Length: 175
Image (tube, rainbow, N blue to C red; front, side, top):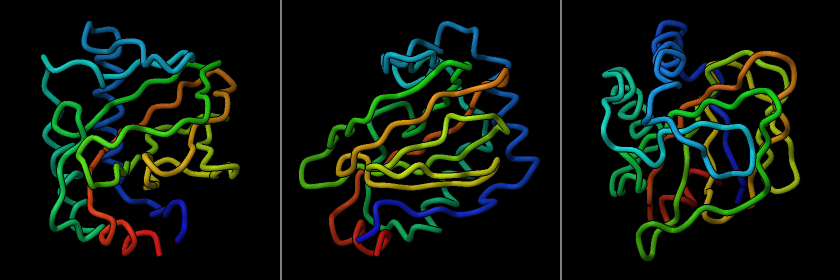
């Protein structure tokens, strides 16, 4: 079984611009807080008192369809989504995420929303090269993952969609 899958150009430019603008317009609000990853990252992971843009729910449905998720739970954050803003200098140590629902595997489907230098995801010991609008999905409760340091002057922004799925569904995604 592979550790991840990449879907090139998963979203279009308009969808990317809407999600990116939402993050840039809101990153200074109280619902964006420190990600607690020992880096320079803000996230919506720990907040509930705000509204995501409607397009994010359409993209979530597109992911569910693409991954053929029939039986699943949304991850344990607002509506199963997280918006992330990582300043230059941010990095994330290798770690595994929790299993949110007993007898399931937690997966993330992340979409890169920016052209930035560095900040590439690391899954196990492999650095993944991605472009803006690409989605990568991986079983975050099963594999060590983190990110390389964000370089240059532009932040790395991305959107995370999380799901708890059974082992059989997980195997079908990553085989």
